[in-house]
Image 1: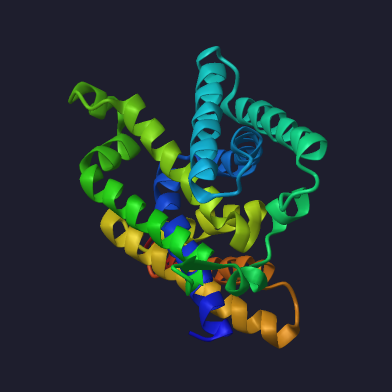
Image 2: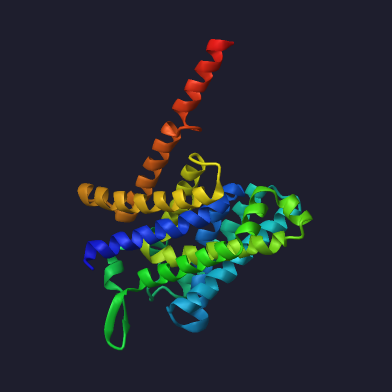
Length: 293
């Protein structure tokens, strides 16, 4: 595959993987928790490196999952102690992220872990960091990691689709039916953590937030069915990556930044032209009502 093809594939995998996970965050009104976890997993990555002295994917995944779950746990704990949810997210987010930055500066400043790279990422370098098996290049490591995470996320969604759906729309009903609401919540947080860390090298933590929230928010305006929303969100995420790449090449700007901007552009188009929830549709409906009132 060509250099351009690997970048497009990586960006599309990020958009699809983040898009399907982001749908459940949108439905649960937990979009800002995605922002928090996408930053606090830096602490997990640094901690995994300090313990294992390795940049291998498995320790990174384990560290990210642990810190992601800790973030969700601390937010849940503060919320149960009657701290406002947005304030709880802000306190946990800034504290754990700051701790990760401090540890990174003190103990890991000479390795391939830096704050700018973790936040902004550089997808242009992805094709050069390849996986070798028995001396044969198998393609970029990021593609394999994202592909594995996508399959894992899809497997979890298929296995626990009913539980994820009910707990997202009506957690009280789910609890009454005997569904372990808290366990499903932490399962989703684990999915969010590994999805975030898998996307670090390609688009960075800040831009992962765009892919986690914007495609799902756009899909939410296009359909009232969860299954359709998941498909639309994945499609919008992939299209954002493709459009963003070609626009970045055209304007000679950051590829990952333009991917996020393209996602915002697609959301704006949906927000205006959505046949049911768009501005034009609402304006037409209000005009029709006023005409007959």
